[in-house]
Image 1 (spheres, one colour):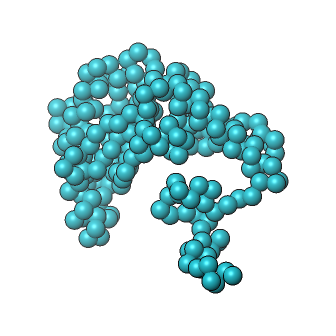
Image 2 (image 1 turned 30 degrees about the horizontal axis):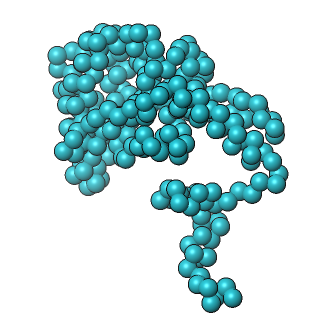
Length: 234
């Protein structure tokens, strides 16, 4: 709902034009229209709507500042795809970027809205959160619909929690060039590895870094086997 409200608002007030003086009120009105069908749900009304009101104030202020600094253009919820050669045949990477901005210096900023926890720079650098760097690779190659390829100079998470801190911008890392190149090379290596018929598909390739929820753990009966002690397996 928050993504949809921001998408609609930015589309209605595209850069480089400055935001209207009543931008916060307009964003709240947009949010009310998006949330309308869901406000009967207690969790939405009591939890997310108050948070959205705080996010709206933060977003309107930040957006006004960025436009005053020379934000040239912005696209939201934009789809892209890139095909890479692999041992088992072409592999296609698809993505939907929350937002891609063209900055005053001509570079691109790829932005990921996060209403939950954003990855840390350490996690991104280690390759555990490759989504944003891979979107950067697509953007540089001109693989997003309607966005010519340009150098990506920013990879940012916009943390939209709506709590005591309504929002904040966190860079995915310091060396954007290295993050993009490493993520793209890592994807190629990973695809080549799994194209090898001898490579097994474990439910949790890295148990120490596994997410809280996995798509395949139930198929591998991970919890069941994890509860078996040594005597049961003897």
